[in-house]
Amino acid sequence: MANRTTVTFTHEGELWPLVDQWATQNGFRSVTTQESARLLQKGSGFFVAPMMVDMELDNNQVRLEAWIQVGLLARILSLFILPGEMSIESGGVRAALPRSIARKAVNNLLASLNQPPIP
Image (tube, rainbow, N blue to C red; front, side):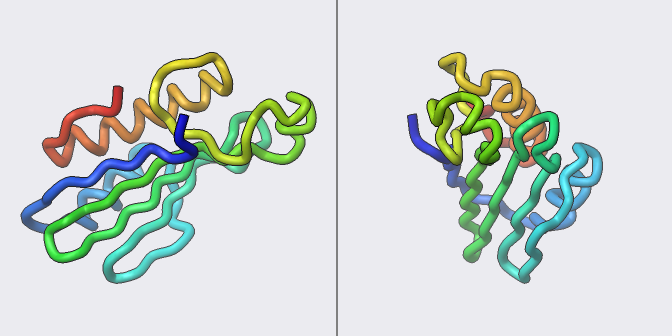
């Protein structure tokens, strides 16, 4: 399993207002905001692993990366079975709940951009 889920697609029109609206509706906060990129995070890692979304726009090409960031305490308690980063695709039992929550949120974003969901 890859550490991050990556989706690339073409988008016509304004991207960032849609992304910013989705982030607000889904509880994501901006970590980094640039003219052509956004790094968004949901959660602080206390109860559930932080969910990360990194988006870059180059002309009309969008690259979206999504992952959960597994904290050191969770890694220690799992005897380092959990990696530092995990993709959000379905499958497997490791960190299934935070991956499912992140996948649902990202799939809402992809739907608003007329893109297929992450399985």
